Image (cartoon, rainbow, N blue to C red):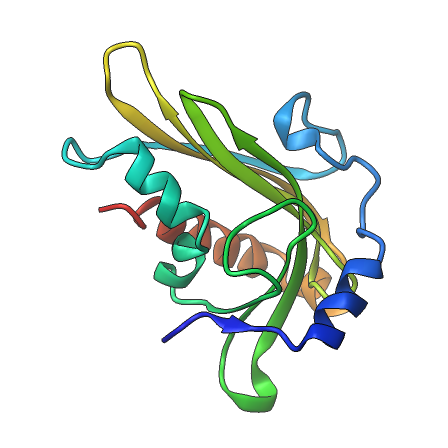
Length: 176
């Protein structure tokens, strides 16, 4: 399944929407209270080059390899790019609009975070960061904070958290 480009008018409309939480950028530092927090790290396989992994990360491959349909404003992750992630079939598909809130592009660290927009079942932020360690190995870390934003998400309770955990696990396997 290929990554789709959003219609320009849809992308522009999403860019003007406010994020659904006030702690924008918090995945880069102190995580806020009052949210469910996830931090998971996986070692990249020995043959995976950090630069190559970063190219894939910045082309939305992690989300696509996790089994999500991906529609984006920009084929490459850039600040303020918008993405609509979806899963499910037809009118039953769940759509999750997000906007990129920051990009990390350092010699030893690469990644980005996106935040939720209205229409997303959750409210919060998720960061995807690759890092080369001093010993030459590389890791992939996902950091997120979220809380239910819709009545359905609130009703889902533990099931909703389980879905989040499964998505995180699939993201972490994207470079295997």
